[in-house]
Image 1 (cartoon, rainbow, N blue to C red):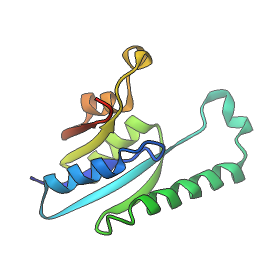
Image 2: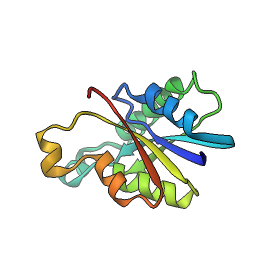
Image 3: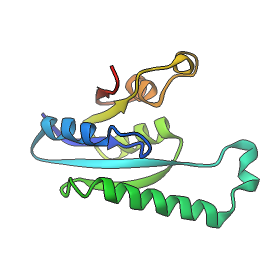
Length: 137
């Protein structure tokens, strides 16, 4: 059982209830579950075209959607953070004393074998235990 579990949530995927259920099953009595969504920053040549108001609106929409997804899990603390998905998840876990990450994963496609998925990077580089909840397997 784990004392502090991090559940990264891709808001466009439907794995959230499954990953939260798995985290709850793995949680030690008196433990804590923290859910985060990583709001990806604009990359490379897109930066000059990303208007501040549009970025702010997108961030707020992500925060509202995370709040909605967590309504059924009132004991879970939710945060929206900015950065690169895998690196931000790994860094958040290390900085916040997380001892387990419960992360969802879709069935890998061809591009995942060449580029790697967020889940694969988290599994490879996290300093703590990682439990993967698979979808569509």
